[in-house]
Each structure stands twice: as C-alpha cells, then as structure tokens.
Length: 124
Image (cartoon, rainbow, N blue to C red; front, side, top):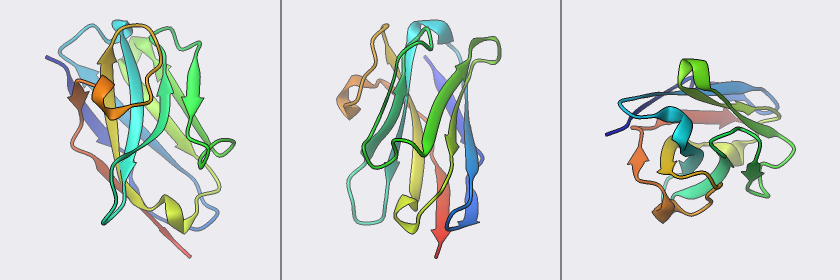
C-alpha cells in the first residue's frame, strides 16, 4: 500500500511560482509511474503531468507545457512539480498519484494511489 502526501500549495500572484512536493511511503517508489492531477471547483479532475519510473520520460498537459516541470528524487521517494508563470486558471486542488509499472500514464484510471491534495490559488 502506497501512501502519498502532498505539500507546497498556497496563494500566489499571477506570474509567480510554486513547487509542490509529494512524499511517498509504503511501497517501492522506483517501480511506480508518478503523476500530478488537478481539480478546480465544479470541474472534473484533469491530468497535469507524469514521469516514468526512471525519470527519463515525462509528459504534460498542453495547458501547462513550458511552464510546469515534473521531476523525481528516488533517494528521497519524492516527486516534485515546479510551477512557473502561474495563471488564475491554474487555481485548483493538486493531487499526486502513483501507477504501478514503467510507462508514463495520462489517464486517471491508470493510477491506483492518490494523495489528499494541496490547494493552489493564483490571484490576478
């Protein structure tokens, strides 16, 4: 059973930056594909970014490409989401997720484990 705990959310002005962290425990972190999703009020949870078990492969939603960067530190069992040039449309609860296997995943159903989420609010 994998446990995921996100941190790093908060309130930031438009154009600012935040770095989210997701600490994993209870499983073999290096064998999981990791992903970030977000859910804005009244909207469905949507894919943001994913990184393969090796860290060599990444994929981003078009809406964040060029602004967000996903990375992982296997020694710390932690995955990060660096968010730059934030916009009000990025306001959402951000969730970390883990999927068993070695390939990058972009669909919610591929992920078995989820964190509790961290709020990101971008003011205009």
